[in-house]
Image (cartoon, one colour):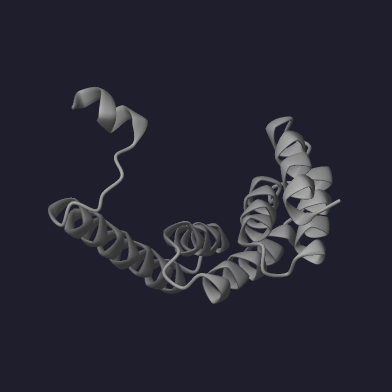
Length: 132
């Protein structure tokens, strides 16, 4: 089974709030392809959701989120996840650091989208097409 198939199996488990099983499936996905960033998003979110049952999972969520930003620098969701994890750990300074990185990355994304629109290179979403 490839990384994407394993990831989607993990998503199904996540939707059922079966956190440990979801984490395991997302880890299988990452093992199948160490560059498949969605697998790390899955690990981070499932570990974060399960943090109250096992507080060591918060460290696993942080490790997965750090892998996200290593693979895709500027990933708003990766930065936001790190911020949330550090808020939960009570580390306000580190949470603010990652929160600021998320804000700046979001602004950059917005500026890039705005530039594409001005240059006529924007591919409108289905919702945007309905407005046209």
